[in-house]
Image (cartoon, rainbow, N blue to C red; front, side, top):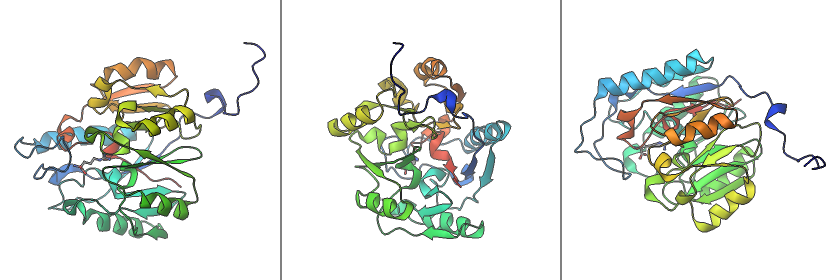
Length: 285
Ligand code: ARG
C-alpha cells in the first residue's frame, strides 16, 4: 500500500481535532410531555422535572468543563419542548436562519430563538419562509450542509438555506418515524474534515443511503440498537463525543477512530424524543 496516491481528503492528523465551541441551551424547567408529535412521546408517562433539570445541568457543566462556552436561553412556560434548543435555528458563519416548526405546539419557540439572537449581537437573521426545524434537520460538515426531510423540514427549506448560507445542500430522505429528525440518525464527528460522520442507514431511503455511502465511504455505521437509544443524537467538538451512555456499541468504534466518547444520562429528555444533540444548538462564527 506504499504508493497509494495522496487522498484528496485531509487525514485527521493534519487537522486540529478539538475546537472550543459556543453552544446555546435552554433549561428544562417547563419540560413536560403534554402532547405527542413523535413516536417517543407518551403524555401518559410522567416526567420527573427535577431529574430532567439535573441531567440537563450535567450536560451543560460537562461542556463547560471541556472548555466550551454555553449560553442559556430563558425557557418560556407553555413551551414544553423548548429544551430541545437545536431546533430553534441554524447558525453558520454568524448568519442565523430561524426555524419554522412543523407542529403548532412548537410554533412560538421560533420567535424566542430569533429574539435571543437579535439581543446577542447577531445581525444577519432570516425568519424562514419554509418549514425547517433548525439543527434538528441540518448538519454542517466542512463543505456541505446535510439536510433531512420527510417528517419535519420541508424540502423547500433546502433551497432556502442554500441561498441564505451559500453552502451546498445535500437533501436526505428520512423514512423511519422513530428517526424523524436528521440529528437522530446522523452525527458529524469532525466538521473540519468531510468524511467524518456516523449514521444509521436504516433511517434513510435507499437512494439517500446510496448518497451517504458515496459521500462518506469511511463513515462509522451505527447499529439499530445504538440508534434506537439515540446514540447518534451526539455532539462532537472534533475530539470529545458526548452521547447517551446507553449507546454502548458506539464507544469502541469511536475510540478506534481517535475520538473520546463521553456517556451522558439524559433519560428524562428521551421521553420527549430527544437527547444530547437535541438539547444543544451550536453558534458557529
Ligand atoms: N418533542 C420534540 C419534537 O418532537 C423533540 C425534538 C428533538 N429535537 C431534535 N433535535 N431531534 O419536536
